[in-house]
Length: 110
Image (cartoon, rainbow, N blue to C red):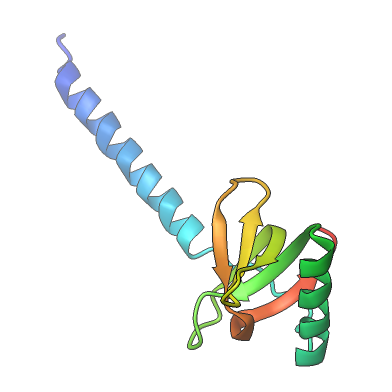
């Protein structure tokens, strides 16, 4: 009895691509639980403290005004001369620009 090996390799490749696509979808639509929503005054005070201390902070921020797609960041906050807030991610070393109106929570523990 002969087995068509080409069919099996195509089937495995198709199955693996499907698994990878499903995994990417799960990551894309993963729900990040929102920590306690902080008041504006509390957020302003913590932003100032985080910039002045230059220590890593955990930040939760929305991706847009019309959605509740929340992202977690952890890193050192800084401010540019023109007033933009930048966070250097401690894990990936990428720079993220934060929008103060979209920041939901700031904490000094990860």
